[in-house]
Length: 159
Image (cartoon, rainbow, N blue to C red; front, side, top):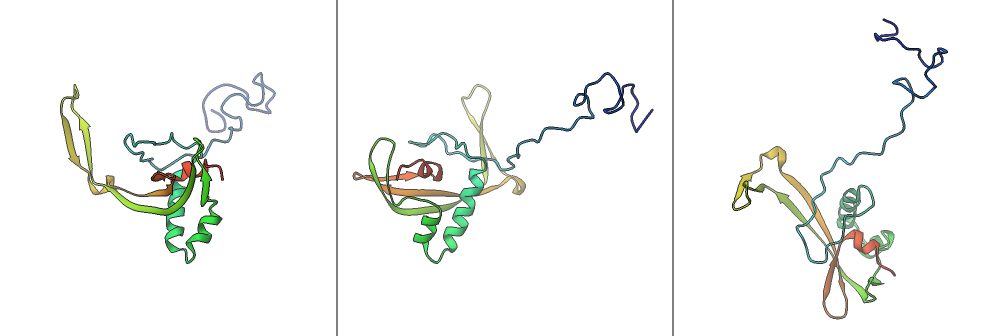
């Protein structure tokens, strides 16, 4: 036994056959930051966008909701956040911002299909599994009606 473990090989710098960097003694590559939050995606909402490619967008949205609610000047807050008041959608439609909506959502139950999918099972969630989150929507007028967009979709608008 040597240096706290029991096997035979040369450690890096020991002149052995193992090239530097191989084996359990090499420096590890830095790992990506882990996402600790559970994303809550809507169930097949019409016009729902694919998941955002920006990491931790749920944290960005949460910070936006918190800051926007406390802002003494909401218009300036939107400018700081680079939210366009007038923009063009990907289909060429001109959009104008009407309002910013945020609401609190609390998941207190779970539904799961039984085997075969003919029936469902409902379970109330224990306190430790109850999920609370805020939803954020930007409501734009497109000349015909209102369009609700997520922060990710707003970031993709052309101003």
